[in-house]
Image 1 (tube, rainbow, N blue to C red):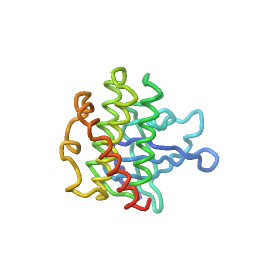
Image 2: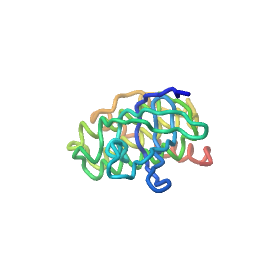
Image 3: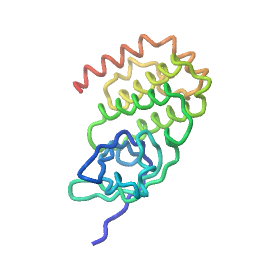
Image 4: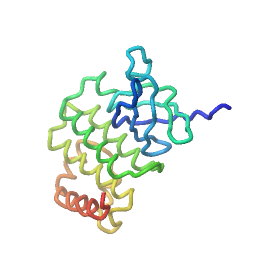
Length: 197
């Protein structure tokens, strides 16, 4: 019996050893939200998928749904933090954001807004890493976290400045977001408490 192969864009959040030669790959996908998928033989030196499924990489994965787990059958990388020069602070910031996503996105649930927020944030740091200060990175990450919590329903509609939820990720907009930093932090803290996660 043949299985349907699903191709979807994904951010690899983590890889966890499984058995002698496999990895469980935790990823946030465009079509299925947060999933874990087994990658057979990924720990072996001869594995063709080793470089396509590194932590913090973005690309396309081919998946088959098993009885209990997803299985990765193929993968290609568009951007990998290990293949592209990226400042450590930017790498750490993206890693932190993806761990935040892993914590608050429970189970498979497609959410285009969350996927776009992660994609836009990662694109910002790749395009502008030389021009972004540590403060800029932090503000942009806070806005992304707020957008994620808003998309998950943990932030009230009336409490948010709509511009913060819709404006493009640009250096100019980051400057304007700085004025709302305290409010953004407060809304995220409240959302975290409400979530109980």
